[in-house]
Length: 217
Figure 1 (cartoon, one colour):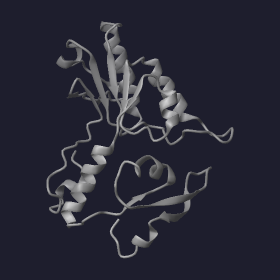
Figure 2: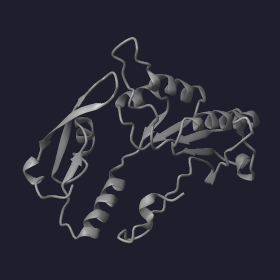
Figure 3: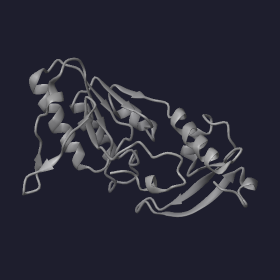
Figure 4: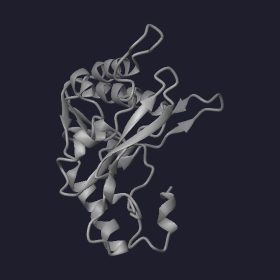
């Protein structure tokens, strides 16, 4: 499926991404189900080619973690010594990167335990969201997202004939991660969050606040 904005005539060209979930060696893994809802996976021609396997996981839902486990174990059944790399641009559960009470379930840690159990030679991520992710996941390699962000901002500026956009970072963590990458003025939010529910109760704004009025952000 294409993203919803692709039908917008104001977009200079169509988005080239798809909701593709999991790919193996460049090809989409077909995810089907038996009538009872359990997974039905069939080996395809690209599954057992030569060289290092590359699995790409574009997270959409938690069932894909089970697919990843079955797929990786199947590949290992052919050759346990063969290298398998995982490309994981978005890390699921990274927002639960700490626990404050005994009621909190440390889902990021347990997710990382599963990824580590699969013993990937490399886990390439685009943005770990939290440096705790980098600590918990073995063999992690963090790619710099600067080129993607610059390209997106450049398209926005070109579409609307802006000389320069004012960037807004939703929280202090995002501001610290990205403001040093981009040569643009910015403002950022300071969240007041209910830790138990995760609900954001309010947002104070800091940074170049004088540029916000009558601006597109």
